[in-house]
Structure formats: structure tokens, C-alpha cells
Image (cartoon, rainbow, N blue to C red; front, side):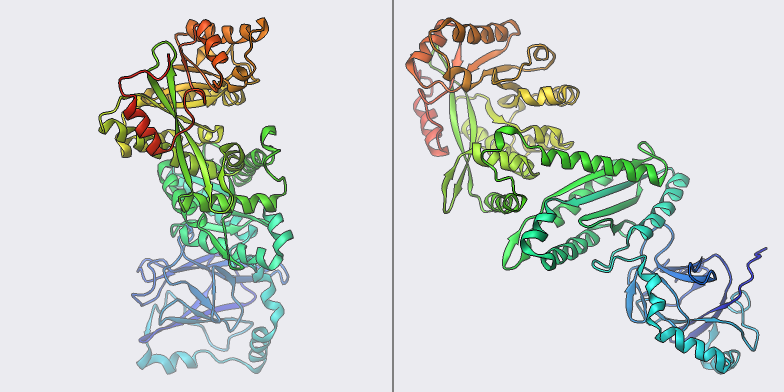
Length: 600
């Protein structure tokens, strides 16, 4: 039995073209929709099956009970056409006496909170619906308001202060739910996930360098960007998902119904595709960069506090990677975030407008002069600045997620080109592609490589991926797993820039490398002095002991070539034999030297 004894009587009158319902509200919650199992049934095909929910809550100021109306059901599934209170669309709103509610169709309702009723109110159980043409006058006469009550109603409608409490649940700038409302959704979602034994994901999304945007372009532009990002996020979600504003430049997303984690990946691809599109601000195209941290129920937490904390830790770790670039990058990248943002936008446009181009540098067997492989090298043909070397723009890309898009483009173009050479009947050999540590840390990287090989129809053993020592040292466990997964695909792996300042002697035997590339910096210092010769000789001996193919990079002089030959280095590449070649030049080179020697 319900022991709730209201000091104020709550009344909801719902009207459509044929019927009127008069309902005395006393329960904790009411479901509203066209499905007959709802507590309150509305008669319209345009209404959703579960269109809205009435919830009883205690007013913090008056300490009296009041009713809130929620768009959708308690499973976070929003309605199709929305709910409007006094003409304004809302997600959740505290109802005030006299409020007019529209359900996105021809059905309307009026809510009253009254201190006294002269006649008995017809209860929902007593009358579900009454034909308006026969009984409208009778029902209207059932409700007789005293002058005192009418004065109260008018005051509540006109007093703007009464709407302040409802605003506590909505972000005024983006019109999204705020932290308070999000936590209510999360609490409901966790209960449902526990009952249904499904996954639930909490995700924090942060706009990188947003302070620089406000500082350099002004707060109105920053507000405009936040509003646009909010719209894109909201339009990308499923009906059951929630997005809320969490902080200045942070949004929080709730995915309450995830049956398989693969579903989350598809949702995130749709979201990132949408929010990564350029924003048109002040007659300029602006590309934003985002950091994301997430936590999954139940494996990473089973309560709201734990999930939010772990998502925040993951986000902070992601942002730390952006704030601590490689020291070698600091000379080529302006540390000011605003300039980084502008440069990143230019690089994004370069990728979309096909300003990037691949060059190809052959690898040669020293003893026979035969071509044993070829390395793909990217260049940026800027329309105003001319050709930009990768040493200048790749570090920039690595400070953002742009390196993922550029890396995929390089891999796809290289694989297409190698397959095209094979289809022309030219000598088959592996094509080498450099990888960034950021690519290898991407959880979708293995899947992307497999996808590119499938698209280009290049056999995996004709692809060689070059990995630097730095990645192995930063995260040996991750490196071990990723490299073994790549090797299982049939792709060959190369240790790049060996001897460039790091030391992987202890780690090298643990990884499935097939090639060891001696760094250009080591070859550049190669002279006839015993010290420099000893370093190169040790690297060559190490590679041979591990049954690795050893390639010397950056060979530019005849003296270097002779010394390497004497040290029994079998393969090399560098300007002495061939500069990096365009696609047309490389095709001519391979056709000319097909079956012939390049050097002797």
C-alpha cells in the first residue's frame, strides 16, 4: 500500500482530438506512451511506445514533493519527437502548476499542483479515458478552483525564479544534460546493466588545445565551437545513449546498452567521423583534435564513482602523451598550442587535398648489385611552401591523432604501388613502410593492416613494417603483443634506426624481427678509425647471430660503401645508389634494372 500523503495534490489533464484523461498523481513514477502497458496511455501514432516518464522528487527549497517529466523511459531511451514544456524542448524538467506539455504530436497535457480541491478528483484507475464529445463538460465541472488557488497558479506561471531549479539539470550553453542529470542517468543505467548482464561504457571526451582557442580567437568563438561539437555528438548517438557537458571543454558519454564490445567500436567510428569533420569558423576551416578516456562496466568498475574516476585517469594519460612530445620534435614545432592547431589544420587539409606524395628508395645487395627491397618515404608538396620533408611534419602529426590517418594513407598507397609493380611483371620484393609509435598503440591497428592488405590484394610477405627502438623500450609488453600479431598476419618486421641512441640488445631477441637497419647517424660517422668500425661491426655481427637481414641506411660516399663491404654488410640504401624516386621514376628504375645489377 502506498503511504504517500501529499500536502499538495498533483493533477495531470491529457487531451487529444478525441479523449481527455484526468489523472491524480500519487505514485513514485508514471510511464507515458502509446503502448497499452504504460501507466498513462496517449492515443497518437506519432507518439513513441514509451514517450516520457513522470518522476516524483522532493523540492530542495520547499521540501515538498513535486513531479519532473523526463523525455523517454528510465532505460535512457529518448522519444522520437521529444517533449515540449511551455513550447521549449526539454530532456528533464520540473513541472510547475499551469505548465503546458506537448508530446511532439497532437497530444497535449496541463499540469496543476493544488492545495485543495472542492470535488473529488477522478483517479486513473477509476477512469482511463473519456470521450470528449460526451463528457468534457462533466469532467470540467469536476474541478472547481477557488480564487486563492487561481492566484497561486498565476503567480507560479509568471515568477521566473521558479525555473531556476530546473536549470540545474541542463547546461545553459549547449542545452545538454549537465553533471547532475548525467549521474542520474548513469545510476539508472548501472541498475539495468546489472539486471540484463550487459556492458555499460562511460567515456570522457576532451577538446585538445581549447584554452588556446579561447585565448586567441575569443570566448564567443569558443562557445560556438562547443555548441557545434555538442550537436554533432548528440546526433551521432543511438537513441539509448546519453551525452552531457562535463566541464569547460569536456563532454561525457554514456553507452548503457552494449551487448558486445565490438558494437562500441562501430558507434565510436560514427562519432569520430562526425566530430572530425571541419568546423567553419570565421570563414576558416578548423579541424579539432580530441582526447578520449573510457571505463567499461563491469570489468573496470561496478559503481558510478569508480567508472568516472577510471575514465578520467584514462583521459589524463591520453593528454599527457600530447603534452610531452619527443625532444627531437621541439626544434621543428612551435610549442604554442594555437600555432599547433593551425599547423594541424593545414596538415589535415594536405591529406584531404592529396598534397602528400610517396617517394621510393631502393635497397641494394652490395655484392650482387640487385634490388632487394624498396622503402616508401612520404613528402608534403605544399602549394605555397613547396616540398616539406617528413622530419618537419611527421613530428607534428605524432602530437595529434593525424598520424593515424596519414599512416593509413601511406600504407595503402605503398601496398597498391607494390602490387601494381608485380602486376606489370617487375621483380617482386618487399616494400618497407615506417610506423609511428602512436600507430602501434592504436587498438585498431592490426585490423587496419589486415583491411589494407585485403583492399590492395598484396600478399602479406611483400610488406615490411619498420619499427623504431623507442617503441620497444617505452612499452615492451605491448610491443611484444603487437609485433607477434603482425607476424601472424604474415607481415615482415624491421628494426629501424638501430644504434641511434637507444639500446635494445636485451630486448631484440624477444621480438620477431626479420631485418635490422643500421641508423643513418651511425653510417654518417663511419670512418677508418677503430672505434667507429667496431660499432658497425658489432651491429652486423648481432644481426647475423639472430639470422636477421642487415641493411645499412644513408650510404652516401664510396668510402662508406667500401668499409661496409669489408665488414661483410650485405645490403644498403642511400643517395650513393639512388635518391628517393617518384612513382614514375621508381617504375622506370625498376624496369631498367630488372634482372641487372645496380652497383658493383
